[in-house]
Length: 589
Image (cartoon, rainbow, N blue to C red; front, side):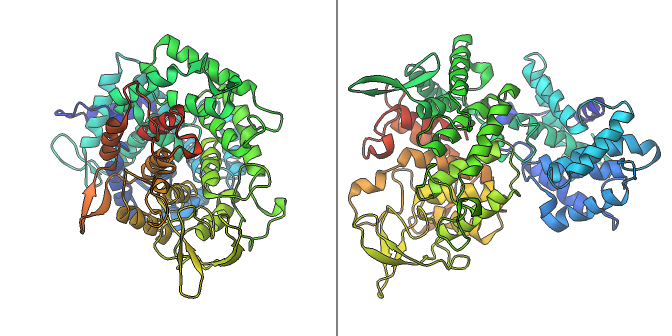
């Protein structure tokens, strides 16, 4: 498997390659992979088979589809169902797939494909296939995992890296309109297309850094900063280093300095956005000491500390997951179970008709909200939880009720206004954006003639909504996602957190600004939006949102490398270490 893919990469190597590292290209090879899948699906046989019509070829395509930036799965119906049916039609009673000389490769690839299509649903089938492989003396890694490991090894070897990247770019350049062309520009056939698809997706997965989390969108986006590390980030990184002692961050009070779990977790996550191969030995040592201290703080229940449990535990998960170290896996799984236990679902006494159903709050009995939920869903995905898990499906109930989109949200409620305690009737609006939770917005309300109030949509929560939809597996074609993206385009603004009622104090428009930068970049990044259609001066234009964010960061960075929200210090954004961590995490996209 490994040598065959490398031979293919070498054979298709062309000249005239760009110098930009692969990680600098947003989602690498996105267009080529989409094109290959499109053509392979179009040419798919009536039996459901791909490529040369064998079980191995079909399983290769399914494995690549599942590991690609689209993260296809068994739930994608007609996109994957025919091929999955074909695999099972060719499964033998002993757990293997295919027959004769095809059986070994077919079973290895089938196990890989089923693992990524639906790990839980196909657990027994994968176990049986692996048991058959072991009986044949095959005890090594599954083929796609091995391909990713080979790519990573080449990237980690300074001497091999330029040549390896050149080969991958050469392969990508040979893909035209979903077909692989030889040196004379002639199509090489479906078998070559299948192998090229696997090779390019292996590169995506290697740059994503999560071979054992096949649908880990979050890890995919976090790998991107390796190519875009620049002066603004380095200055912010140096500032954060000055705020820690042996990897631990402190909160300063009149009574003294105190180690803070949440601040440490967020700080360590921000420090790890600097590519590991660019860190000095001292920088890496500080990070490792901080991670060790964070790990030691985990409670028997799985939380990190006992205050603001959801926020702090999610931050702890983020920091440990970014280290990509197997020794943290037990702690991450323990923390995942804790986060799942906090969701407001039947086990906690909630019914589907309740406003808070599917949400997560700070960790006690507090009301759930979209901010806590977006951190929680990211943590679930970072720890390998499949988006088809019921936790995501129940979260979608809450998410839909938070969105101002009457096509999908008819939730109305009579509740107390948190500002003055008065009762109010609330109903959803229809602009596609999001409030803080169903019926509530700190940015104000639109009051209808009958007195009903519509909670105003605003920037940070609309980005959080978009992020959550993507984490929960909602496709970009869904009306909920499209409505949120339209709201963002109509309200694009990096100078303030857009959406506030004009009658509210000017200060309101700037609350949570740096938090917004972070969630904005994460949401647009994992949703796969490279350019955003925004309305400016009565016209619609296509913008590079990453470039605009980088320009804003350079504009507002302070001389010492830090960032601070000097227009509204709510939620600790007046303390430089907090907005600086937010901005580094934003620029990581």
